[in-house]
Amino acid sequence: MEPAPAATARQHALEHVEPPVPRGKLTPLSPRRYGFQGTWDQEGYDLYHEVRALLSHEVPSGELSLVLQGALRIARASRKHEEARRARAQSRAAAHRRSAGRTAPAA
Image 1 (cartoon, rainbow, N blue to C red):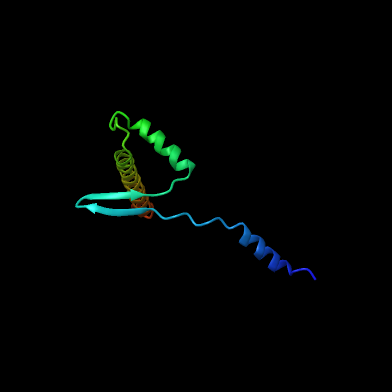
Image 2 (cartoon, helix red, strand yellow):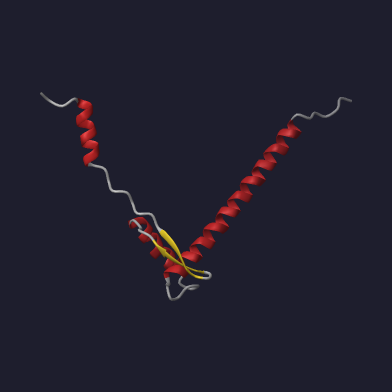
């Protein structure tokens, strides 16, 4: 007797489950100093090296923590800029909607 199709599919799924990716660790080392440990995939590794090259004039040593800090500053500035742009667009749209309901008085 053959196993039920659902049981076969479940067994197949269990055989092909990838192990969970370990979570990164951020560990306090001393006041204002932290240890960072994580696992990157190939894309993260390649991005790090690309950003390291782009920031080489600011971080000539290529020190991992300084490169990541520079990348995080850039990401924060980009996100704040995008949020401000979105807020301005929403404000303009709301003003347009308010003014669209008004008509010039009849003469």
